[in-house]
Figure (cartoon, rainbow, N blue to C red):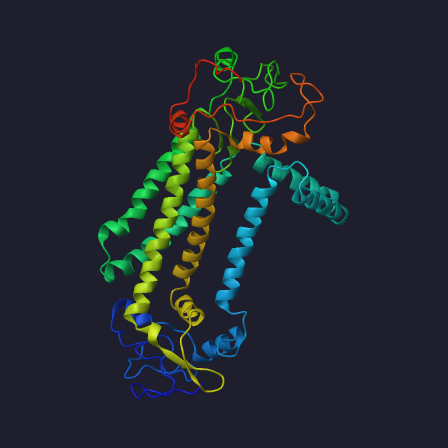
Length: 414
């Protein structure tokens, strides 16, 4: 890679790319000083703080295909990675309420094929490990939860916070993620330690009077074979906690507890604070990188393509430059953006369930109740028609989430 003398400029220069490279963070925003493929800043200063060999940059640019018409560049691969993860998450959500979905059949067939290839002893070890992870109460996911937050905030504190202070970001804006983190950890602790609404012999009779049996999802007179108690309406036995839970929603491994009538409001606040925390970190980090680009005038820079023509720097090249200069920050930003999207979607779904007075268990059952056999309370020739009899309006539904009824006059079925 041919070099250019400092300060002399070159054809196809990145105008103003290093014009602000003087001390502090700006010493890291111009690693391509003297590269013929990118050009040098007119009158720019050499910035050697990023120790990346010029030959490596040339090979990287040619491999990624910038200026040569190749579409599989860094940004494309990164977007494909994010889209694939979101597609898998969406597929899991769409298939969660179907008893014999395409995903379930595919997993079953794949496991049957793998069982012929994997030794039986290894299969037993894997089954025991999966059973211990997902079918018994374990703090492993809680530890993983805290470890991921520690990693993100370690990077945020070590680099993002320091650079933002150097660029004179407002202190309250930088402290906002820490405040949201403290609120999220408080909700996590309360939600994991709260009684979700365990049905016992002493409270089973009173809980049976809280909600009416709708005759479709919940029938009167059913006895839990494990707890040997008559199941109140909207309750379900949790095999992980080994107890029936009043107004059962689901078992969450991230809080190591069931989500029921006793902690549904705390879980909603937990999701809200976790989404807001990830969003705040992503917003501050993105603002930092945008400020760096604006101050370095990189958005107005140019480079020489394979035909020797001068072209403006595109978004893929700018993203690659930022990734080479701030690899940990850009990687963290991609992670928290993906996390914000996934958590935001899940929080929106949970909020919808709260506003309509439904649980995840009831929502999944209502999508497949048509495949269930007729219940004794309805004639065999009449199809089952599910109707949510528990909704009382948006505000009363939301109030019930945060102030769950324990002895409520039963609503008459109409």
